[in-house]
Length: 116
Image 1: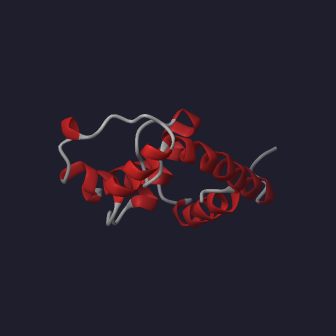
Image 2: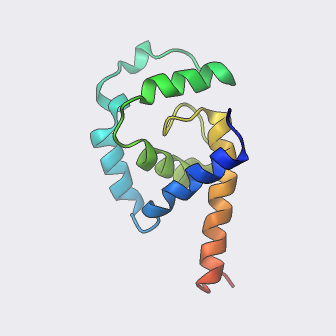
Image 3: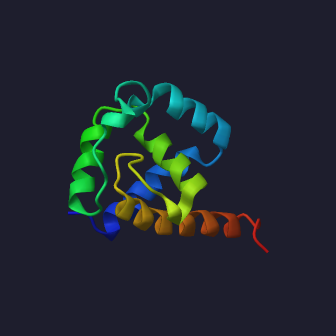
């Protein structure tokens, strides 16, 4: 079952990428992401929302070595407007993770005195 604790744990795992620039994340994800070189994008199933997309995300991203980097990149670049399958999560789940992820980033910057 996907719940707030799962979203919080997922967001916490992404903290390790905070100092990694977007272009580096993009390079790693496009170089090493299974979806960029294993699957024919035209043959990918249509996304419908909800549980079928959770199953699709899990299946497409199974065994991918860069799911966390992929998720971090998508949260940074698309935020709540995220679409498709990124980081092994369906859209609804990524939107929930984004809320927690964003709060974590704002809180860390506030603690460091970067937000005034």
